[in-house]
Amino acid sequence: MSNRYCALAIICWLALSGISRPVTAHHGGIGIEGDLVEWALNIDQWQEEQIDQGHRIKFLAYPRQPVRGGRTRLIFEIQAVATGAYVGGLSMQLRMQTPDGATRTVPLPETTGVTAYYETAVEFAQVGEHRLTAISTTPDISFQATFQRQVSPSVLLGDWATITGNLTVLATFTMTWVGLLVAVQRRFATFQMDPNP
Amino acid sequence: MKPVLDYLSTFLHLIGMLLLAGGHIWFGVFTAMAERHQRRMDEQVLAAHLPVLANGFGVGILLLFGSGLLKLLLWGEPGLIFLPDLYGWILLSKLLLYMIIVANGIIIERRYLPVVRAVGGEMTAAWAQVKMRARFNLALILIVVVLGETLRFSRL
Image 1: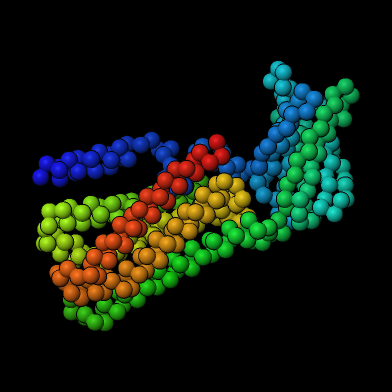
Image 2: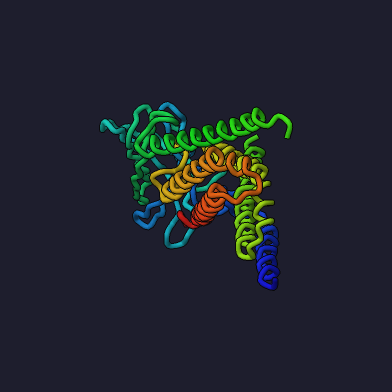
């Protein structure tokens, strides 16, 4: 009997400790708004950084995964490594190399009101890996950094990772649907066999 | 609209977890206690309520899948599950385990539940199978929960 009370006490403690968790608690892989998971996943943006000539070049892309024909914002944030100060007032360019090797250069103007943010918006016309090089053309301040982004043909099709992900979600949907049908069928069959429960 | 759907999907995912994981935990505890104390009556009561429990588990599964899918659609990542990042592999593992859980539930629902319901209070091999498979599902559900917690640290 005492074992039963002990087990019940442990279960109640577990339940109460679960209820008293803060609202930022994370359950089963779903990240709550503002959660560390969302930050870590870069859900709304892609970000990575490089250091060159004493400057940290932080690259951000919105949305995270560029899709052919879709508008993608490319932002480069420049920071001095030694002082940590954000570096505004630079003259910047973006050199884009498409998968077929063609290159074009576009200006990277500093975003009004946001110091050290150099931004442009592009539409990727080709599928595949694009090389994006941010270059400082400011006299006496020379640095550059190259980043690579894979452009997908659509939100449904793309590389193996995209196809695997979509097929996996489709398989789970199918399994859930079959389970729902079986469950409904069981209830219908029960009703047929036992009309007067 | 997006924040509302975001909140709703999280909330429903939690409710689904409560129904499925919580239900399996309580079912496992009660069947273990009944077995340990050799209380035939307790097991009969549990077996009699199995269809109701199955309804709850089914609702839990639907809530979990629906809210999870809604979240993935809201995030809008091509490929949906963030492959080939580490997060994607963990999410893929969760989904594969989810499919095993659902398949096991379908077997219980299709093969054993009608037998348990038909024979009433009799403790049969079907009832033993239900208990064994429910415990197996509980183990898988706990692994999925652990993987869910692992997601938090996968990219930190």
